[in-house]
Each structure stands twice: as structure tokens, then as C-alpha cells.
Length: 169
Image 1 (cartoon, helix red, strand yellow):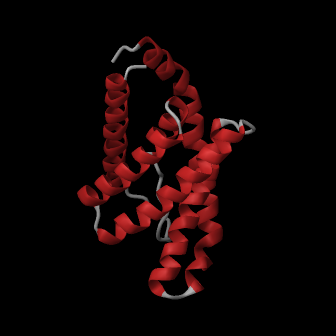
Image 2 (cartoon, helix red, strand yellow):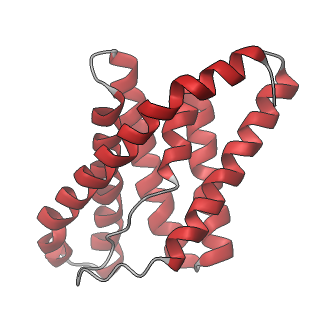
């Protein structure tokens, strides 16, 4: 694939991630626990990981975290998002590289890792381990949303791979 088209596809994936991040801010999700989100924008990250590789997915993850935080959040949101996103991207890249796991499993592990990364930053920020009280609920939420995002990714990935391989934008 030519570098220009790869750059264009990465730009489209970043725009897609930002649109999904915005849509997620419009969905009122009241479950009584802080930090539980649908993680819709992770669809773009998982697709990028399987289309282009771990470096591009990490770049996209960091770009999405920074830009969505600037557009829809605040400094603390950026800090939590960056920590969770980085941890998630590394875990997903390692699992994908092993070639032993299907996309929904990789995505679910990424969802769990994202929440764990955010909890670690929260514990450091508030200087207490009391935030780990939320760990079971956040792990279950990350697992469920990760499986859903991974399943959707595995369904649309063949179509997108076909488009990318033909070089048609």
C-alpha cells in the first residue's frame, strides 16, 4: 500500500474514532459507577490494529485520546484516557501478535486493560487504593463492551480489508 493511501486511511480511522467518541458523549449511561463507558471509539482502534499493525494502532489510540479529551473533556479526562488507551493498545497488540486469540477476545482484553490502566492512574491521583473497590465492576464492563466491540470489528473487518487491499478510498 502506498504511504499516501495509508495516511488517508489512518486519517479516516481517526475521524471515525472521534465521531464515535462524540456520539458516546450523547448517550446517557447511568450505571452508578464512575468510569463505565461503552468504548465505541475502540472500534476504530481494533480495526486499525488488524488492518495496519500495532504501531499505527498505538498512534491512533494516542491521537484519539488527546483529541477527544481536548474536544469533549478536560485535562483529567486526557490523563485517564491516555493511560487506559496506552495500556489497552499494548495488551491488544501483544495478544494479536501471539495469533492465539480471536478479535473479540483481543478486544475484550483491551477493554479490561483500559479500565485497569485508568484505575492505576486514579489510585495514584487520589493517593488511595480505595478506588480498586470499583475493580470487579469495571473489569466486567470492560469485558462485555470489549466483546461487543470485538464482535462488530470481526464482522466488518473483511469488508474493510477488501476496500483497503484494492486501494479504493
